[in-house]
Length: 196
Image (cartoon, rainbow, N blue to C red; front, side):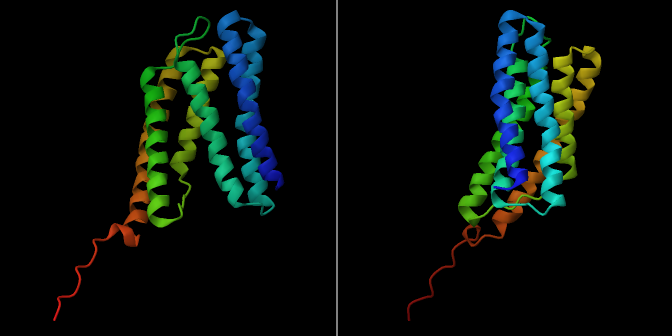
């Protein structure tokens, strides 16, 4: 259990607090709950960069971290998008197309990763800079909504996030297809030699 993995687990533990406070704010409208939920979200987002830095700087990359880190990202973003896409009394909801883009990509990539794992036995994920940009933009849209900043700017950030999310999803899909094509299971079986 490395320091980087401990930070990642702390990020995961912040997610239920974020969800609880946002649901509480949805019902009560108490501003302190919005600020507490926003603080939990912001801290989890900041720690995303911290655990990556610690893992690289102190050579703490591990197989557990390779699973936990993207899982923490997805749990935080998916829960945020679902909660903020619902009709909300006190917050402007996120555009439906924004949530559909993010959730669709994550579902397709998860199914693709399962297919690659089944066929190859191991999934190699090559980080893409566009995927990182998409994650930053997604978190910016969510933070923008929680801060109740002007909606027109949020719309254009959401457009940029959706485009980067879609294109990065295609890149990861292409990587997965290359891994599948290199697997023996993806080649047609050779016909048996003719009987003499």
